[in-house]
Amino acid sequence: MAETQSPLLIKRYASRRLYNTETSDYVTLEDISGFIRDGRDVQIIDLKSGDDLTRQYLLQIIAEHESRGDNVLPTNVLTDLVRSYTTNAQTMVPDFLAASFEMLRDGQEKMVKTMANPMSAVPGFDQIKAQQEAFLNTMMGGWSGRDEAEEGVEEADGARESSDLDDIKKQLAEMQAALSKMGKTKK
Image (cartoon, rainbow, N blue to C red; front, side):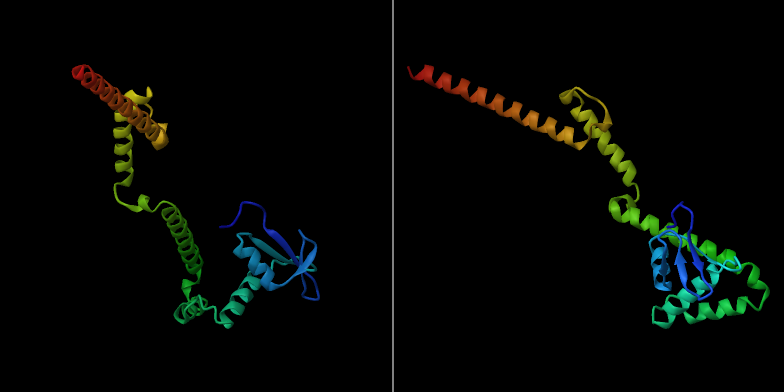
């Protein structure tokens, strides 16, 4: 995910060296690839002409990854991309690719959220959770003196512990009364 900050400006010198204007040092294509993987947008400008070279360098990064065996783009997709440069499809391919990658990003975000709470993917989970909260709220409302659903499980646990203690006290009192009766009857 790209951050909302301005793109990292990289200047290309006549010697073809790439200069990071934020850190004031020279960078490689691998460094630029790392910035992008970390979510940072980059803009690469030719220092002398002022031309934007970003697309050229991004394509070069992709080509290097593909040549190393990091095959992300299947041959049929590459073939279709080449064809799109020679047909009328050239005008709609960029929009299609942008929409496809946006859908991929959205899907990844949803997957990450689902992994954080796997039960949220179960159909009707929100309704079940709301019913459970309402039930606990109703059952625990008299014990804790509060009726808010936001009290949560911790307060319900505390009420249960308090109730258990009350039950133990009651049982102890009953046992003491029974022992007292037994003592009186033996005399």
